[in-house]
Amino acid sequence: MATVKKTAGASAKKDSPSKKASQPIGLVRGMRDILPSEQMYWRMIYDKASALCDAYGLERIETPVLEDTALFVRGVGKQTDIVEKEMYSFQTSGGDNVSLRPEGTAGICRAYIHHGMVSLPQPVKLWYWGPFFRHERPQSGRYRQFYQFGCELLGEEDAVIDAQLVLMSWLLLKELGIEATVKINSIGTAECRANYRNALVAYFRPKRSRMSEDDKKRLLKNPLRLLDSKDPVIQEMTAEAPQIVDWLDEASKNHFMRVLEYLDEVGVPYQLDPFLVRGLDYYTNTVFELFDSSNEDSEHGQNAYGGGGRYDGLVELLGGQHTPAAGFAMGIERIVSKLKSMNVTADKKRVDVFVAQLGEQGRKRALAIFEELRLAGINSSESFAKSSIKSQMEAANRLGARWTLIVGQKEVLDGTVIIRDMEAGTQEIVDGRKVVHEIQKKMQQQDEVKGSN
Ligand code: AMP
Image (cartoon, rainbow, N blue to C red):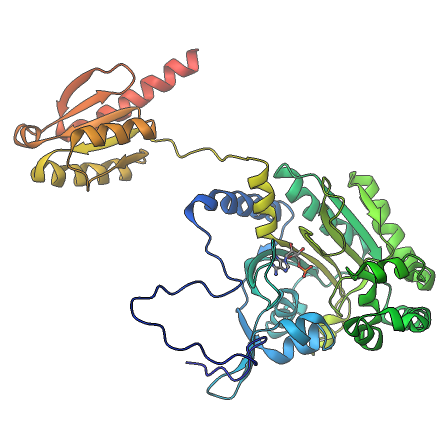
């Protein structure tokens, strides 16, 4: 087992004293259970996401939850909030410095390099789905373990890739019935950004005295982060701040214009946001985020459904060849919460047959019949732990079963089964060996009646 040497946020706290055996052990702060009642939303989003990726020719990839800490320090950036404050990092007993992944792109780039994907036909189109970890202050819509669905297209510099990614992220939400607003910006190349950075520092420096200590640090280390500050004082200052668009070189401007033209072509509505920068160092040129259209207060990363952009330098930064690339990640919890608020319901599993039993012999036979039904592909249900026939019939009604099979002591001795038509309230006795066939016949008759109506 790994020995935790240092984990974000844990330094000041002592180990909690061992709990009394009788005391229930609670959830770790910032973690949550995804209960059965919520699973239908997760499945809905997963099914839509995977179908979309299939349609656009992306292939699924899974990378480990645990990576070398250096991957994120180098990839995401030393001065970012994620690396500076939010990573779950520790040293294993073997002396390796590892971190729970806070985001997906760096791991995918590592895999691209590690598996020599540069020799595959480009672009390499990948998608992922899984848990990520950030030691952030827990609040509504913000957890310390959260799930992301993400797409990465590596090995192509054309602006059409950026537009396709914006389209895909927007389409996922649209197909789920969610109207999202795309906010988009270009932050140019590293060189454009260096010049812009100087202009920003020159603009904000005289205003330092009105800044919090944290924002003063940001001004020193990562002034672009001031642009998406939630502090109203900074927001007021930002309104007049220089805009990156005036620092873009011709190639970056041209690239951005083409992305917007492609988006116009496919009818994705977007808003230009000159102060959208995103919190990770690796972005170049296009950056975008998706917000709830019905909530105008959701600004810069606050309650965004997701975001992404181009990261042309990242693969090289991680030791690979120069590989232009772009991607996005969507937060699943945020989408689930929206679907819940929209009272979206999934189709319930249809139950054709309920298997009821009476007495120990009946229960044994019912177990076997249930298995025969399952193998025949018939949607069935049961409550074998119950012995009262009344409560089993209630369960069958609740589930909306079309037929209930009843197997009691007498039926076992006779080798028969009772089929109860739950709509008509009629019963018939059939040969136990032919019960599956009888049900199949009834289902077929029912389909024919439905078809002729
Ligand atoms: P990011 O790449 O950091 O912008 O993350 C992409 C998306 O993941 C965000 O827009 C959120 O929807 C989601 N996300 C990021 N961090 C968290 C978190 N701590 N809890 C829940 N969702 C998150």
